[in-house]
Length: 352
Image (spheres, rainbow, N blue to C red):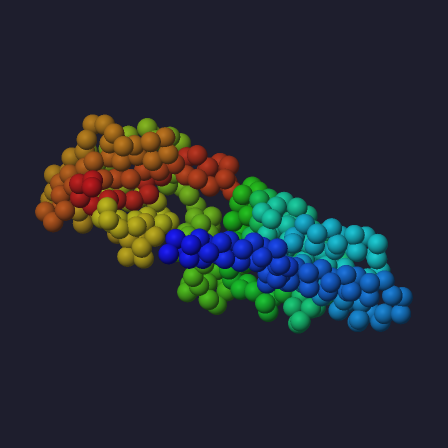
């Protein structure tokens, strides 16, 4: 019995040794790598021929590049395409090869270098259509997403609007362009572009990703720009003093004058200033007659250098407490108004 067991073990060991000594079949991965290298070698050899037509040469370069893309060999892809473009400056498809180069850099999380190549294509190469798609349009789409420069984005948005109006939402681009003008301090251009945005048929209904209530915000800014702004005060102290005096004297006409004539809101703490039903236009007269209005001696403790709250009571049996909301005017387009203070709204009820 023991002998049989030894024999069985020996046979198993011999079998293992024999198997290990026999030629090992290549794995599918190894076969794939070998086939890939053979294919690339043949294509590169074909590319050396001088009798290739323009179309055939494009097909060969494209096949080599796409083979590299398929295995995510971005490093060699970049080397191959940039060297090709440099060695063949007359190749009509160089814009496409550099587009693939930029894409490879994007995949390697090298956005600044990708931006360089997208810019290079737009500035140095004529537009080219591949499979019906404009190379310049694709570059501009990428550039507005990855660029950190407002000045550059202004150029990109303007090019998209002027060159590809049928491929983009003009309405959305006007809004985004206006934001970049603001970032650059080009206030006149920002106002002009917000006006162009509001003039579009779909401005009031468009949904812009990351920009809730775009229409209302643009309208408020333009309305403020077009207003007299004569309700603003030099300082917060001057504004609060005037409001308190008017309340003490039950001078509703003065309070009506002090209220902002554009974008004044009256709402609960749970509402948002941009809610359409938060915008109110009413006279203080209806709430002052027959009521005993009082105000706190000091501004609320949550007030800040840019906004302030004054607690008042006695306006209504329904909602007795009103917080008058004052804010610093943020309107760099008009240096004489920027930094002044306005009474911008009313919050109903105790603070939440």
